[in-house]
Length: 246
Image (cartoon, one colour):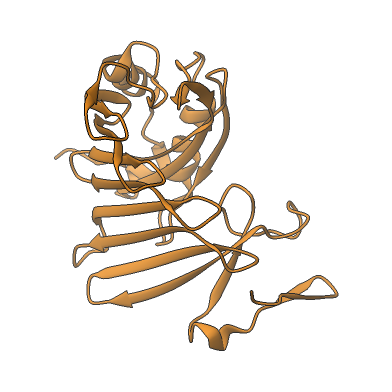
């Protein structure tokens, strides 16, 4: 266990353990903000090698809770993302491989024994394939894990975006384009409760503002996510692209 010291609003972490800088996070895995958050709940380390970046997130007691490997092209556009999620005992709970260009992902959920419990493929908000297994590896009919689904499925989601999204006049006049990465949370009853911009690279504030506006204005409820047969919160990370046509 690693000791974390609190001194006058500053958290000190013995960074030599990892040989890299640690970033403090709140309970939503967002950067810790003293004006918004009382205490950090997690910390994250980052290691870059070529076009790959690996992020590891830990509890404040140094128990790993997730590991993300991000692959980008030469323009820093995300290509692929692999996410490992661990339980409180450090046992792998799920592995998700996402093609960021097609938004098609495959998630494997595991029993504590390491046996696959559910193998599920999704595209954006829509489950396109799902198979569940018992602890002996036999296929079972029940699917216990489902992501939250927008009203009307993926078709309804894109119809909403195409209807409501407006290219900011100032950004259009100055020829600004870009992709805004949005994270939002759907709670247990299907309501969007929090929306954040995740862009680390510089991008037009007007594009970010419009992407956030559209997400916060979504008027409908999702069909909530289920995990092990119970409704749960669901986190989404989506790109909203602004491109000017010739």
